[in-house]
Length: 173
Image (tube, rainbow, N blue to C red; front, top):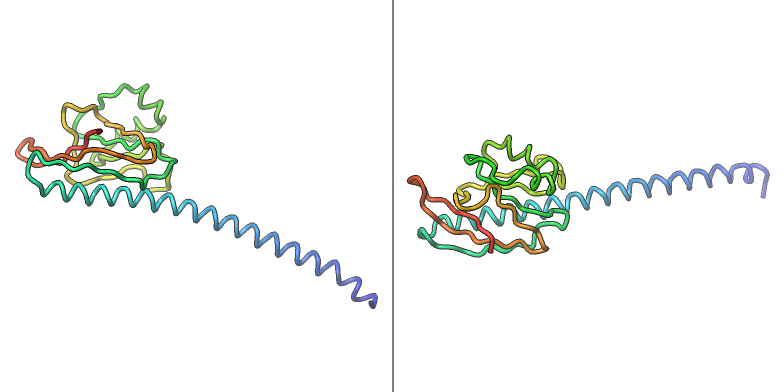
């Protein structure tokens, strides 16, 4: 080997090491974004499935019911909480804070949203609160009604008549 070739070899090795580092960095960054997008997609699927089933049950006769079962929520979501913003919060603040320390704030400031996923920071904005049209809680149920996510979220959707309006109520199985 000539002397110029020997002097140039460290530059090649350094360039290769820098390129490998960049490939690894951007690869791991992209994988993290893919996993975040996966959780967001699972949450969106759950909400869309719930909206579809509420719309179907809403068109049934009063007193009709349907079992809603979904495996779509990611394991990071511990509770799906249904809330009636027109009623006061009936759970004590300590219970809500034990689920998530920000949940009470979200519930207290909610004007329209009736579905909250806990923990509230499980996904990026605009989550964790949603509005599902025609979904309401019966007065006999606690407000909010939080159903644990045990890998499968199950609840009963039932039509009822209240105040000259038809609503779909959610209740645990």
